Image (cartoon, protein in one colour):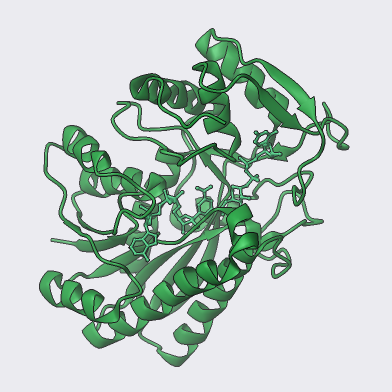
Length: 342
Ligand code: NAD
Ligand code: WQD
């Protein structure tokens, strides 16, 4: 059996990837202390897959605990999702981000070395491109000018993987730069669980449509885009999850050591207002919104060139923005009126 340690496997992207790994006949083992996820995700995974998930509730920066998990499970590969991801919080408390995001990867790589595990897939982000002049951005576009401490942790983690890979020729690394993951599993058993008031667009839209929030504020309509609002590459989380299966399969077919980076997006940019109107059309519900000022740190436009991931990994997206916004709404409806008031 192809056992895969999935750190952060109870989180938004990790839980959807867990489902796809199971569907591909692999054996995912979750390592997550649930600091940013909830117990009920495990119930959702069981409903979808028919099997109770195996989870080790430990902190990935705890080397002894990680050692024990690797000794007990004897995995053949790892997908490392575990990280803190709130951009604004990373500005307030950068050390939390440097400690967890960089510390957990450094610990993981040490433990992998100790147990002879060679294959690792890492969650990076389009944030490493900063405010890119290239559009669409390719994997060769300039990186390193991230807009936040969170973004810099991804820049540093990528560099750590390149350095460790150069020193350990047996290591096989894939770094995946996600664009804007949205949506939920079509079963509505798992989805995004934002804690408190969401910063991200789609959870804010669904909570507004559900009446938890009074109105959405569109952060600026004076950008140089077709309707004045910012452009992003919104990718359905199920498509994104499938790319991890493709990455593991690709890695296991490598004879030589590798350290490769891939963009994971749709290749299409949509504006904020297009996302709002698509949501309204596909779900038949209104999203009250107002136009507000620009949000600090936002880039005008960001979308992926996906040539490399489709040619090398043989992966491409199958779902549309409308699919993702429909599934996000079904998930919100399954959650009911949950959500902390402003
Ligand atoms: P998430 O917060 O939903 O999931 C992360 C999971 O990791 C959570 O369940 C949390 O409890 C766990 N975790 C964090 N630190 C841990 C630690 N030290 N020990 C044990 N468990 C720990 O986040 P997500 O949206 O699923 O993101 C997954 C990864 O993808 C992260 O690395 C994130 O930076 C990256 N990413 C996310 C996005 C996005 O928009 N969601 C975009 C680009 C990249
Ligand atoms: C999308 C668009 C907002 C909320 C973030 C991280 C990035 C990466 C992906 C992890 C922007 C607009 C939003 C609202 C709005 N994550 N918006 N009203 O900022 O593109 O990327 O997630 O690696 O690092 O920064 O995503 O969903 O916050 O915003 O108008 O209430 O929606 O201004 O144009 P973002 P987002």
